[in-house]
Amino acid sequence: MNARQIFAPHGLRYAVSGAALLLLSLSGCKTTVDDPTLTTNIKAALAADPSISSQPIQESVASGVVTLTGNVSDETASSVAAEDAAKVKGVKEVVNSLTVAGIAVAPTVTSPAAPSVSRQTTPQERQAIANNQPLPPPVESAPAPPAPAFVDVTASTGTTIPVRITQTLDSAVTQEGTPFNGVVTREVVSNGMVVIPAGAAVSGRVVAAHDAGHFKGNSLLSIQLTSLTRHTKTIAISTDAYTVEGKGRGANTAEKIGGGAAIGAVLGGIFGGGKGAAIGAGAGAGGGAILQGSTRGQQVAISSESVIHFHLAGPITVHTSQTPSNYGPPEPGLQSR
Image (cartoon, rainbow, N blue to C red):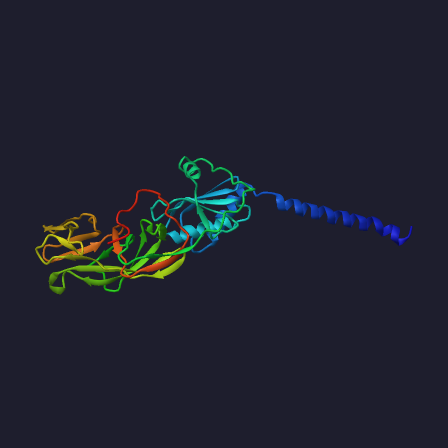
C-alpha cells in the first residue's frame, strides 16, 4: 500500500466533514430563535443600554413579535426601547405599547429592517392590544412599506404646549434660575402633522421667585420653557412666562398673572398649647397653590403633576413625517393662545 492509498481515506473524511459543517451552518441561518430565548435576549439588550436600563419596561414575545409595556419617563426613552428591541436577532416586529409619564399614546410598530423608523398600529392591531390578544402575524412576503414622507412643519407664535410639571416649585425655597422638567401631555399639531409628540420631555427655568417674607410680603413664582426633546433631538424654544402671585399678610387668594383667575387653596396654621397643625389643599386648576401662615404673607407653589399651558413666544419648525394618532380625547385649544 503506497502513501497515496493510505492518506486518501483521511482526505475524503475531512472533505465530508467540511461539507457537513457547511450544510449545518447554512441550515442554522434559517432557524428561528424561540420565544423564551428572544425574551432573555431582549431583557439583556434593554438592561445593557444605560439610557433606559432603569426604566420599568416589560417585554413579552409571541411568535417573534415583541410587545413592550410599562411606563417610561419620556418619549425618547420609549423610542430608544423599541429600537433596542428591534435590533435583537430573531425579532420580527416590535409593538411599542409603552405609556409615557402616565400618558397613553398610540402604539407603534418597529421593524428590524429600519429600527429607527416606526409606524402606527392598524385598527386591528390596536383592538388586539386592547383585548390582550396576539397580533396578527407579520406577512413575510409583504413588500416593505414606503419610506415616510417628511415635511417641514411650523408651530406658530402663540401655539399652546400643555405640560405636566414633574417637580414642585415653592416660593419659600425656590430661587430665580432654578431649572425644572416636565412632559408634554398631548400632541401639538400644525397643518395636519405632529410638531411635538405626546410624552416629549421639556425643560425650563424659574425666571422670578419672591418669598412671602420679603419683597413687602408678596410671594411670586414665574416659570417658562427653554427647550424640548423631540425624538432624541433637543430643540431650543421660548415661551411666555406662567406666573402665580400671592397677596400680602391677611390676604386669602393668589392670582394667576395672565389668566386673571383666582386659584389655589389656603393653607391655614393653627398654633397653640405647644402643638401645631396645618391643613393643605392640592394644586389648583392652573397649577398654583397658596401657603399662608398666621404672621406672614402667602407663599405660592406650583405642585408636581400640575398641568400648565405654555405658549410659544416664537415659531419653531421641525422636519417630520408623524401624523396625529387620534389616541384619546383631543386637548382643546392647542393651536392658539
